[in-house]
Structures are given as structure tokens and as C-alpha cells.
Length: 86
Image (cartoon, rainbow, N blue to C red; front, side):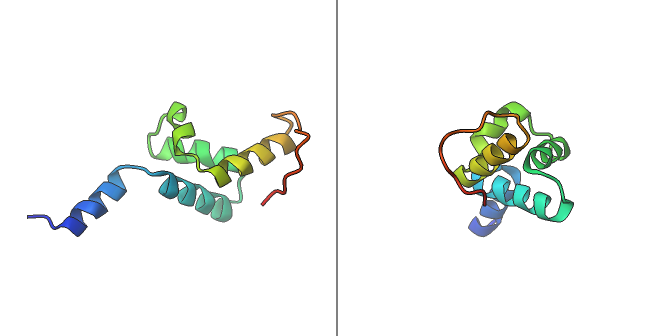
């Protein structure tokens, strides 16, 4: 019979939360030397996650980092709002 802790551990490994997804992407970026966009695509490929489901998994800080990166790469127009890249 599984205990409550075993069940919670199993749920955390099977189902992806915003916090785990963001943490995993940050780890990918730091260790892989790649940008956030590439990290998300690679992570989704490795974990069989549909890219269409990614927006639900993005935390606010990760969205901001993606927005800054996209502006630097000229994928998005620069906004008039002054924001610091973190």
C-alpha cells in the first residue's frame, strides 16, 4: 500500500507544474548554454510535451525572460516599456 508521501512524489513526477517546468527550463539554460526558446523546444522534445501546451506551463518570470529574449532576437517588436532583463 502506498503512503501519502509516495503518492505525492509520484504525482509530482508524472504531472508537470509551472514551478517544475520553469525550474527545469532554467536548469537547461544554465547547463546547456542555450537560450530559453531552444531550451523549451528541446525540453518538450525530450519529454514528449506538445508545444501548444507550453503557455499554460510558463510562469510570469519565465514569460518575461522569453519576451526579452524574443525582442533581442528581433522576433518581437521592442516595447516602449522599460524592463530590466534578468
